[in-house]
Image 1 (cartoon, rainbow, N blue to C red):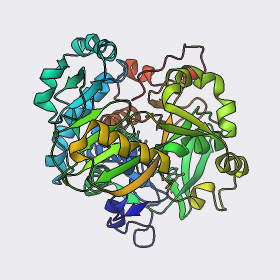
Image 2: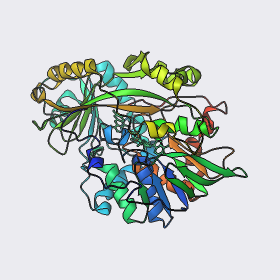
Image 3: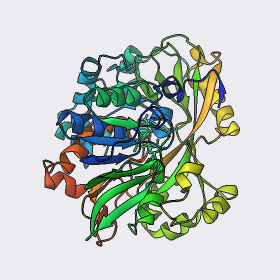
Image 4: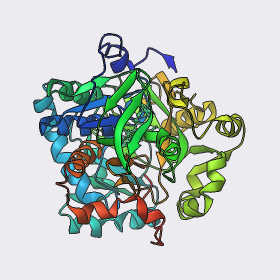
Length: 452
Ligand SMILES: Cc1cc2nc3c(=O)[nH]c(=O)nc-3n(C[C@H](O)[C@H](O)[C@H](O)COP(=O)(O)OP(=O)(O)OC[C@H]3O[C@@H](n4cnc5c(N)ncnc54)[C@H](O)[C@@H]3O)c2cc1C
């Protein structure tokens, strides 16, 4: 990471909530593994329901995906399977600044998917039927309509798909603020403390083993982001999950072109609370081949085929690193989670170069603004690019919340609430069945939702 850091800074400033000054509890009703936006939101809503909850984060709260993402809070373009959850999530986002008493950079500034030609515009327009079904304010803008929302003369766009109620928030603030809210509501939040595994008896969770001691608990939720496959695998639970690397930059404060965010296959920009932009390539992600790629190839094939234009496969160090990582370990010795506290992959220089070129071409008004920080983020994905919010066969009391597939920030508060309701037995079983882990193993067809 280069320049003055904001990514993960919220957490650098964050409370020293490590085990040294914050002894771990002996027991909790629910233990949450992972302090990303999903784990923090689940802890927040559970604590507000009066449940005793302890959350353990191996590194820093929001140190991985939840602090490195683009900051889009969008309904637009989502699969109808997760759209109702996203709509509920947006309502929670609206309440969060007041409930938390913190500025998390939340603003409903709209989202745009830009079309370079009429064919692309027609393709984008296909999503309008889903929007109508869910009463969204999504519209197809002509090039003239677009000028009201996007003040840029750089590119002659054919038009755009636009949802005015879509929003943005600051990843450097949001999950950490939710964690603080959870703590105020009574949750125990411990960073720099990896969970090594689960103790079980008679097929159910009895305790959670951390690097700093054992917590008696009959319920555990794994919200471990990109680590979930490894953690669950050590318990004998298969979670099909692969990762891709995204490259991101933020600019210095510069001219305001829009109030929200805009995407095209070449470039994606999001207005930031500090007056700059979070910038990324609109369609360039790298997947480092690992043994898991081959293991899950058949399940991921439909998603790989759908996203092949934006995906590059690489082979190298990651393959051998994964090969050398144990799949099981003793719970009284160091686990892989303690060796890699924060996944902090390097951004791809060539992608940064492409982003600079695309800015000049598409948004020349802001192209001179320097990149003051660049970073990489490892995005985890499920085979149908939809969340897994589920119990696990054979281990009662164990739940999984992962697979957010590059769009879990926006849906995070909603998903966290759903996790809290699932654990408390209040969730709608019909909704949960769409997110069950078993869909990848029971012969159900794997139909990927939209990937951006
Ligand atoms: C570059 C990029 C751009 C994105 N853009 C967007 C966007 O604009 N909008 C959007 O909605 N989504 C976006 N996403 C996706 C979104 O960031 C993720 O889906 C979401 O943050 C996932 O949250 P999480 O809590 O599941 O995982 P994470 O944020 O990855 O958190 C998981 C945490 O679990 C911890 N952990 C793992 N194992 C253990 C263990 N054994 N013990 C203790 N702790 C453990 C990890 O250290 C980590 O902090 C983007 C992601 C990236 C990387």
